[in-house]
Image (cartoon, rainbow, N blue to C red; front, side, top):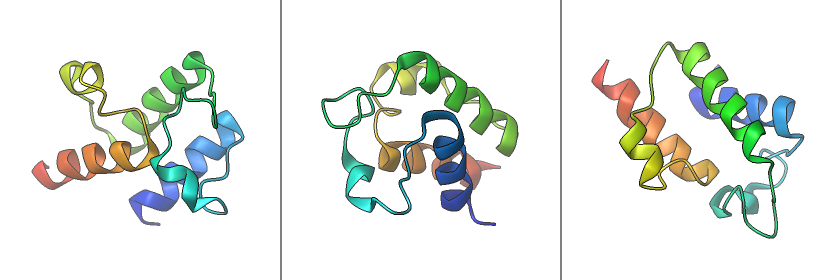
Amino acid sequence: MNCEIQVEQILLEITGVNFEKNSELKNMPFFGKKLHINPLYMVLVLMEIEKEFNIHFPEDEILKGNFNTFNSVMILLNGIMNKK
C-alpha cells in the first residue's frame, strides 16, 4: 500500500474525513472552517503516522505549519521517507 493511501486511511479512522473521496479537501487546513478537525485528533494522527512509518516528524516543521493540510503532511512525510 502506498503512503498516500495509508495516510488517507489513518485520517479516515481517526477524524472521519474521507480525503480519498473528497480530494478537494487535501489543500484545506485541518483546523479551518471547512474541516474543523479537533486538534487532539491531529495529535493522534501524527502519532499514528509516526508509528506506521517508523519515523519522527521534526517539531520545528510542525511549528512552521507543515502539518496543517493533507498535502503538507504528504510533502513532509515523503521528504522524511526519502532520507531513510
